[in-house]
Amino acid sequence: MKKKIVAVTGANGFIGLHIVNKFLNEGFKVVATVRDAQDEKKIKDLKNLDQQENLEIKSADLFDKQNFIEIFKNVNIIVHNASPLINSDKEDDFVKPALAGVENVFDAVLQIPKGQITNVIQISSNSAVGGDPVIIKDHTITENDWSDINVQREKKAWYALSKTLAEKKVLSYENKFKERGITLSRICPVYVLGPILQTDKINISTYKIYQLLTGDLKEIPQKHMNLVDVRDVAEMIYQAVIKNKPGRFVAIEKGYTLEEICKICRKYAGKYEKNIPIKVEDKEENLPAKYNVQSSYDLLGKQMIVTQLLFFFIINFKSIYIILI
Figure 1 (cartoon, rainbow, N blue to C red):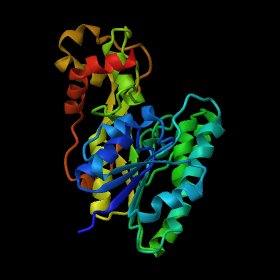
Figure 2 (tube, rainbow, N blue to C red):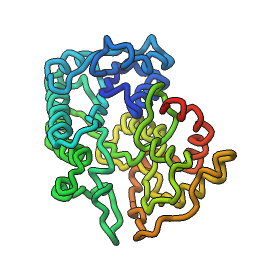
Figure 3 (cartoon, helix red, strand yellow):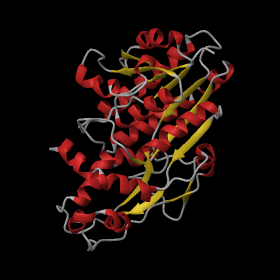
Figure 4 (cartoon, rainbow, N blue to C red):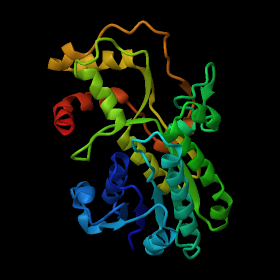
């Protein structure tokens, strides 16, 4: 039986590497796209993955539709993960490439012969659903909720805004894809932790936990984090393909206050326990929002346990520290 081919955009990022790794391990061929496939620094982590005989790495430009048409010519499944996460205070630096990416990737899909592409998965974000800075008090968040773009603009939350606008743009393709027999799935992860396949950087979520273990914080901030294991995110994407499930799925185990996270970390921290603050800062309590995302749990088909994830983080604390210095 001929192996199906999966294209993954933004393949060399924290989540992207796990998506590529998952599909390779499940026997798929993968076309992994990065900004510059000739840059050895950009592709070295992809080259460290197993199943190299089934991996092809290509350059892709979010602003170049023709580029994606060429990349997708033999592809059956597309996971659009590429999105700007940069150090900038300008709205356009986030929003323009995010929207261009959706438009050019999805327009390219429509140029491929009908019947070839069966599944398209957009990697969105909880920030498009109900994440910071939009927390709805006394409301249980579901897959049907959307963040308020006016509030995001007011708060200058440009990354969150870009993810919200990009996912809304995705919906404009839903009927066109349905007519072509393409299943469209949207995965919205919260803060993502887990094994680090990148050798020279860590993601923002990991860094936030790292700060709790260094001893630099004297008090626990009155903040919270909604958490999920990156392997569960990759599994949800895989299951959306295998089960041919359309719709929107929020990837979350649950929300934790930083005080709760510190308590869990202390159980496993060993010599780092003395670094973890105990006192909580004297500010208004910031509790996690409530979620009811049963369809996401059903898609994954298993229980997500962040306690195990935090244990993994701590035993790898030394290697994370080495990456940062």
